[in-house]
Length: 508
Ligand SMILES: Cc1cc2nc3c(=O)[nH]c(=O)nc-3n(C[C@H](O)[C@H](O)[C@H](O)COP(=O)(O)OP(=O)(O)OC[C@H]3O[C@@H](n4cnc5c(N)ncnc54)[C@H](O)[C@@H]3O)c2cc1C
Image (tube, rainbow, N blue to C red):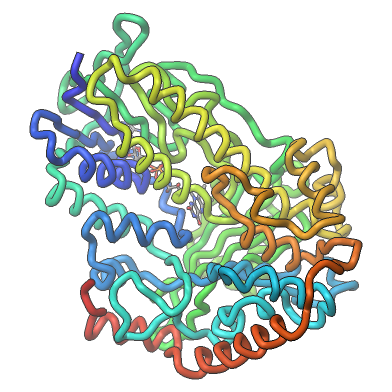
């Protein structure tokens, strides 16, 4: 049977990202229709403001102008996550920090890393990339004369999630013929072989489709409630399960950090994301180690005693993912597929990746489903597991012992076998590209090095096989010059955003 009608249930970031990916990939098939059904009553989660660089490629492929995106979604540039106090304050100092940069140093990485390992007298990120200095100077990653989506340095964005969904929605409807139905799905009817046959809605009646994408958020209406696909909990490995979130308006001339600030505390961490007109702040914690009242009071302290001036809400987080993201004639994406925690902004990343993967291989008939489904589920499993490991890495490398939250995080029982194996190996050897053998790894060598060496987890043995002089010395000097140049020439972050709003970037 041909697949001619697709329903996407849910109009949050996941639903509209899926609509754009599928709409674009399947546009030429005029027999095929895509309908997004969204509840007029159930709000989207309204958080999810940090992204990673891969989002640029998707936005560009959807035909969205970067200038319009920046103007409409209160966007700021994100070049890094600055991790503050993830190490013990007594040993490493108050406000100790490191950057997980988006710049990938390329072929110079090995030599610059070897050079840094030989003396370790500076920040690792600063020793391998000019972006460290650019970030610390609050500079933008590009100039007004750089074309859309291109930068002097790697970057992603901070954005207003509600406005982003609106922009994606307009684009999918106008460019890719996606139909939009506002109705509450009240019942999911299963047919032969327990496949989804139709959706019963309150205001649009009974709707039949050939294929379904579940983007209904934590409700997971189709994949969980109807198809009952089990959920793999990762709560034993990743302890945080709650967040208090608040939005704090900022002045028109307030300085905007070009990175997310992630500050660790006794039982989790705080995100601080600056948009062009406000800060989004979230106090993330483990309910096993801290109660709501303490979390709220500590967030108040972080905000200088001004929490009561703003509305805040507590969001519980279900930590884990679906055993099978693709079941029968349904694929789950976004929060319906799973969620770990926001530490490395992996949720939109995984949704974007999965939606594109699906769109590129979307079956035109039911006969093609089994093979693609098996591959999709396998790839998603692998990606989720590696993301769990990468997030866990930040916790288990910490030498903080100011609460059982941190000491328990170092218990090997709470780490995957793969992470233990890798960490064991990296006690003796410098991580290499060969340690990351799959293209579905999500986080690569550079990402691991920024975190491992930012957290001062370096090999015990000195690396003697690498000739440090004179090649690496020349590389280091060149990097220092480039860092100084960029930190001097690139505009202040806010100045560039203001200019883009006024004049726009060059179209590609
Ligand atoms: C505390 C927190 C912080 C986060 N921070 C980040 C971050 O920095 N970076 C990042 O990448 N991700 C982050 N995320 C994840 C991010 O918020 C989500 O990936 C993203 O918002 C996508 O959500 P969604 O579209 O899957 O779900 P939602 O936004 O919840 O949308 C669900 C949709 O389903 C619809 N729906 C529900 N029930 C029905 C029904 N019965 N009938 C019809 N429609 C229905 C709703 O109306 C809504 O449109 C964070 C998540 C949390 C919890």
